[in-house]
Amino acid sequence: MLALTRAWKYNTLQRNSLKYEVSVKQARVPTEAEFKRLAAVVSQGRYGPRNRMALMLSYLAGLRVGEIASLRWSDLLDTEGKVRDQLRLSAAVTKGGHARVVFLNARLRREIEQFRVSLPASPSRGQPVLVTQKRGAFSANVLTQLMKGFYVQAGLDGGSSHSGRRWFITRLAHAGISPKAIMMLAGHQHLSTTQRYIDVNDEMMRTAVEML
Image (cartoon, rainbow, N blue to C red; front, side):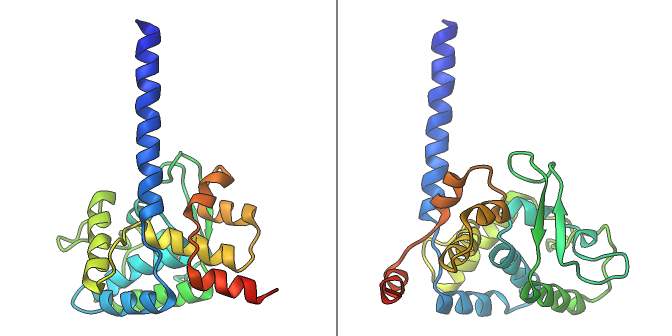
């Protein structure tokens, strides 16, 4: 009986793992033109600056939606109020419970500063970076739904909260960055996981053969 129970649990875990892998593979990776359109669409309206910030943290830092939801201003700003060039995610907020360092490039640092100055008041260090209409912190589930809506608004079928991470990882891969470096930047423990996120399309293959 114990053996059967263990076998059932193992099979269940395998099925759940497979479902997760399929969902990651199916997340659309926008082209550069589609990304620009997406960013323009989400930047509109009352909550445009907030929505754009969520998008950029996903695309330019490769953060998971739960990691984005957990961010406080103290994570992004130093004690002098300057935007950090890296942030540290605690094991409590990362998938798998492994603390990691996330590097913030110049483009993302500008986006963070622009978002901060757009706020009606200077945020406290303990305040969530992204807040809901009710001024509370986002849960990962609510932020996932919000980000799903970005793609609907932009007319990009198949986009999800995974799209930004896939775009981030794909861009690094096709820029010739070391696979191990990409794995670490993505916060993965296994290279095989990172490889499943990489997207390949006709334009990428065309560019590749032109290099010969």
